[in-house]
Length: 144
Ligand code: ATP
Figure 1 (cartoon, rainbow, N blue to C red):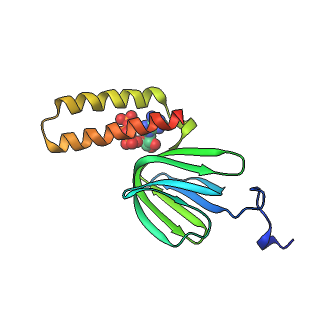
Figure 2 (figure 1 turned 90 degrees about the vertical axis):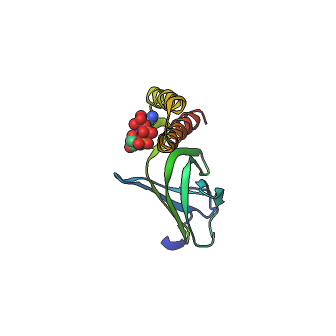
């Protein structure tokens, strides 16, 4: 079989090449059958052959399905570009579920909750809400 139509490890199904990039560099690349992302206008899924698409991301989980497994990451904002059968995630932060430090996320959640109770300015409230959302997302992704 020619190299360019060689079937991948997904049992012959078409796949999407996903690259996860953060300010520290490329974190991981996957070939998946389906990916679900937390767009700022709402969650959305991408299958192979999706139309070109660019959007911003909010804090949330990224679910990717290969033939063998479901892979879950936590992201906290950034951009995603869908072009051809490639998805490029440019995230402010990104951690795979098993990289998340539960105690750190739990401490961040408690700190942010305390700040929300004590906050005096809108800036404080916005920062504390964002920190709380990051921490809760990490804790949820660990459980999923
Ligand atoms: P903290 O107050 O614990 O730093 P934070 O939400 O303010 O939490 P971020 O600014 O979102 O942290 O992330 C800073 C860096 O630390 C990023 O590289 C992110 O991937 C990493 N990080 C943050 N929290 C965790 C965690 N619970 N487990 C693993 N990595 C984390």
